[in-house]
Image (cartoon, rainbow, N blue to C red; front, side, top):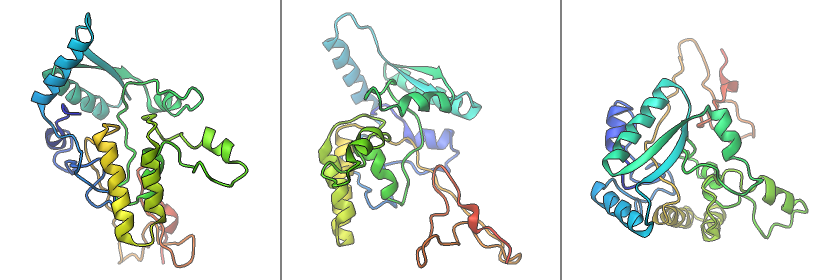
Length: 252
């Protein structure tokens, strides 16, 4: 993580359209916190590599493998990261696998293990805290749930999005506190504490933050995506990393 040049990745690969991360979460998120975030520092990175090699006699390099799909832009992103890691004395092998292939292995909870050294994928949402819950938590279902199907949910669906396979349940406790808090201040404090733990332990990091824009034409009387509420009085989320709610796109 000390060898990820986020500023240049944003400049070169995203043409400056992204937000250079200072946290695993975007600056608009309630859990946004800079505390514990690992900044780009090649000097420290080389020190870590040297310490790793010294602790593993006979090992000549710090090497890890990451799957990337074959799309040209994704491959160029991979090569950018690969080049930066080389400058720190780290070898990142690029495994060409389409998303459907690596996702089928990465999200497999049967073995309880993550088959890849690291993953390059979009997952965290900028604004909605609930959307990140399953990714941050060891299990998205509470251990003390009275639901008679608790065992099934916890063993199959619960750890599904915990791609890091981390086991720190104290992060779960903070996330539940954030959801259960009666005030926004208390919720924010709990979510930020969870973010801090994730960053301090190096469980995951962010390379770039993206945003979406929705434009509708009032003159043609088009209503925007997300304008039709599923529950009366509640707005829907028009865009997420994986889908767009086009149900509201209609001509008045």
